[in-house]
Image (cartoon, rainbow, N blue to C red; front, side, top):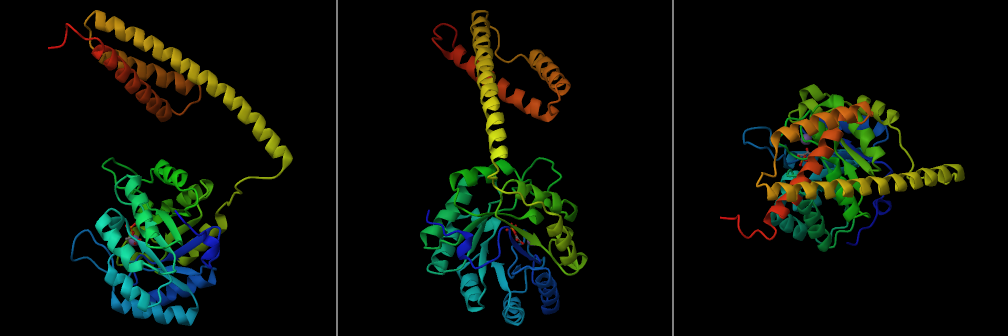
Length: 363
Ligand code: PEP
Ligand code: MN
């Protein structure tokens, strides 16, 4: 993909900070939020004009009126504005209102037909377009949407990580599942990556830790929901913070460098990495020795017509390894996840053994 980096966007970065209300609700709300954000140095204001609500009847955005407020405030305060576009008509109206940055929402990213129509409407527009991850934890839809828009000639592109829906109970509204964003970054290293902590958290007390984590993972920017009076917000009330809170958050963020040219740092890092390389060699040799034993047991079970899965043994193994891991100062959840992975692989391998040259026993 042909991606032009953030240096071509004419914005302050890194990190790029986009902040503003979930939705533009009134001219006064938008003006006072934007003016306060300007005083703390924010130059791109987000504001939803058309709100995708799961069920009808909720506040669906102020539409055309919101576009008028944005145009007026944009000129008066000299700020840039970003909004969500979900249909070609939204694009047409947003272009007329001189919206500076477009974003594609999570519900739209999940629908290739909608993304294709958007891409055609955006064709030839030289403005940044941000693509949120789809609700389902699948990076191919996310990549596909970025590709479709890129093929329409948009090179000022960025991916926004806003968390994924999940059936599992979680403290997050949309669990971040960080490894999916890292996978996207590995596939497209040149694609700027922005974190949206507000929709991940769903709750304001977690915003700071998510922003810090995104910075530690080398994200290029943040998109944070900020409302002048969050408790009165018409959408996403619990996750919006005030401009003052955003200021404190930014002041408290630790921005780390990608690397250091300090020779002592580099030498020590290399030394430690060499040690890790050796430990990894041993780790894999040990795993390979374990798998050989697993296979030996597989053949033995087969000879004796005994099932692959042994519940009591699995329960014993999980408990003893988790205890051992804890005594070795390893995280309990980590050890349990690791053993589930190892056990799955053992079952897969023994099942293969059961199938192999299986002449007499299969019915
Ligand atoms: C939003 O940014 O307000 C929004 C609706 O986001 P998402 O598409 O990520 O749900
Ligand atoms: Mn929102």
